[in-house]
Amino acid sequence: MLSKLPRIKDPNFLVGFDHSDDAAVYRLTDDLAIVQTLDFFPPMVDDPYIFGQVAAANALSDVYAMGAVPKTALNIVCFPEKMDLDVLSQVLQGGSEKVMEAGAVLAGGHSIDDVDVKYGLSVTGIIDPKRIYTNVGCKPGDVLILTKPLGVGIVCTADRVGEASPEAMEQAIKSMTTLNKYAAEVVQSFPVHACTDVTGFGFLGHLHEMLGAGSQAVIYSKQIPYIPEALEYAEEFLITGAAQRNRNFLENYVEIEPQVPFGIEELLFDPQTSGGLLVSVPGELGEQVLAALGKLGLPCGIVGEVTSGGEREIVVR
Amino acid sequence: MKRIVDATGLACPLPVIETRKALKAMSEGELKVVVDNIVSLQNLEKMAKQMGLVHTLETIHDTKHTITITVGETTGEVVASKAEPTCDETRSRSTVVVLSSEAMGSGDAELGRVLMKSFIYALTELDRLPDKILLYNSGVKLSVHGSDSIGDLQKLAGRGVEILNCGTCLDFYDLTAQLGVGSVTNMYEIVQSQMEAGTIIQP
Image 1 (cartoon, each protein chain N blue to C red):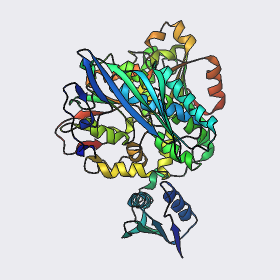
Image 2 (spheres, rainbow over the protein chains, first blue to last red; image 1 turned 90 degrees about the horizontal axis):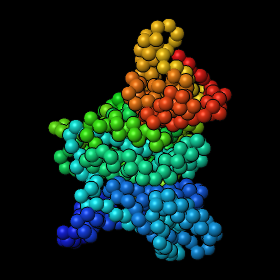
Image 3 (cartoon, chains in turn brown, red; image 1 turned 60 degrees about the vertical axis):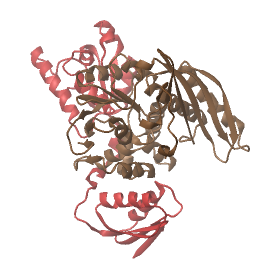
Image 4 (cartoon, rainbow over the protein chains, first blue to last red; image 1 turned 30 degrees about the horizontal axis):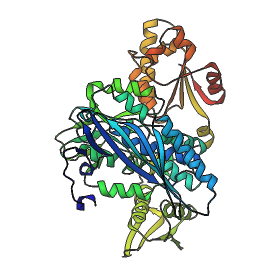
């Protein structure tokens, strides 16, 4: 859709929507650029305070995926006039705590009356323009590392129809409210070839973007970190329309080998809210990066490697 | 017996859930499901395929599609082996692996270490992984950088196994800074995890 909009020609506009990247980056001086992002959505959990935290962690994530540091944030709020304002104050409370944890300043925002609740933030960060992680740039021989478990979309879906266990929901919430700040800080000390965060297009959708034209990847289904119950729910067909849309979109790019269980397939297409970072680093550093990430306490893993010369862009084994 | 589920106006996963419910209540016959979008139809098709049930699709127009599923007749290629029935009682109680030493069994120390390495590797190959691994005393030496089993333990952690290392033990062996997998725990949690376990495995 964006391809119909006029392209902006400005030498200081470094990263934009031409590579479906996570944020806009604009160079101010030789060693300083600003990173701007915006994200908001309707609630995926019942608790307004947790929803606020998730929405903020999700909006901040795009800044971390570029390797930048968030500095200021503005709230975006849609809220029904007739609804209890206490709910809104809890949403904002959750959001502001995450912005504070990120070390950024919440500078205000804008709210409008709407039929449904929606919340998110626009976040501005800073970065050295020579150190931007774009989401293209994987090299053959790289390993792909995912810093959060998959399955939060499926667990939230199961929860909406009353079929998620409290333990599964707890794990999903822990994952969604964890800032990608910590994972970003860990990977910063390694040469990162490409980085993105896994959100609405699902793991395979974002991997497809990251591979761009030319690179290929093999994914090891047995090494995918996921919330254990999410696999059970997927196998009980608590599956989403959005995952199927991702599957349809990626049909020509992905080959899934027959021994891969159906539930894992669904997890790989499942849209994630505030998902983890997907990082491409030189193969020989994979174990070191993983060991450092392992200390953060969330399931993570080396999920595949970048290859060249295969027939399909992505092969799941 | 022919039954109909009208799932028009329902968003995923509801059409699938309603269909699954209706299928469970049937021992044989045909179930026709009506949906208003192609994505819901595709999700229903996936389910029928996974369950190995004979099904036919029909698109009447853009916003009306049907799938007819025949119960009591299978395609002969049941893909649903993954959804095998599980015993809820054992599932709700956790499996905890206790590694209280860097060696497995008593006897030659070197042999014990080799056995432990292959024990941990074998854990990674299990279809149903343990829920937790507790490491204490010299067991914590397994989860530090440079250990023979660090890669396997990281793999297990990546697949959702909770790895808990005794903090006092890491301090005692002066290994806290070298910890390469899992989190640090205390005696309270070590006791609690074993009290709550359905199965404890101690090699």
